[in-house]
Length: 210
Image (cartoon, rainbow, N blue to C red):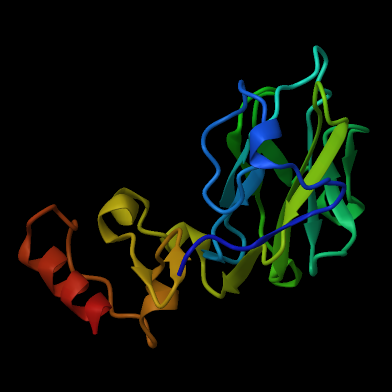
């Protein structure tokens, strides 16, 4: 499935001949602007998740573009949980949000730590900037990222094997894997140390795949 659709919030339609050079990377869905974030992510309760994002634009920016990023949750018109302009963080996310982004860059990620069951919802990235010839522009993802919170002890996350076992299936991108979320009931711990390439490791991963 392709990237989510986008909706301009304060965006006049521009003929192709009027587009200015000096914008960001080429936009795939619209010649003027674009926002991209994953449709689905999953992480264990008590753990953390990074929601990646990127955006593009075709206009030349003002000398001071006043670029800012904000995030909404639950639905497209949902309440803001984070804003770089004020700055602002919603009360129930205090000390749990970290934006990995430098002003001027067109990609980054939002980290949510100490995940709770009530964090299971959709998250919507939004960008605002000022252009040289077309004033202020604001646009946001329509579909956002649907975050699923799985039950389980985050200490059991197979961090060493995350990159190897990471998968994308049925349109869902699994950011981490836990014993409790992959198998029910959880397989018994193998005797002795779990060494790479050992028969115990092969037995464990065979169990996890079923």
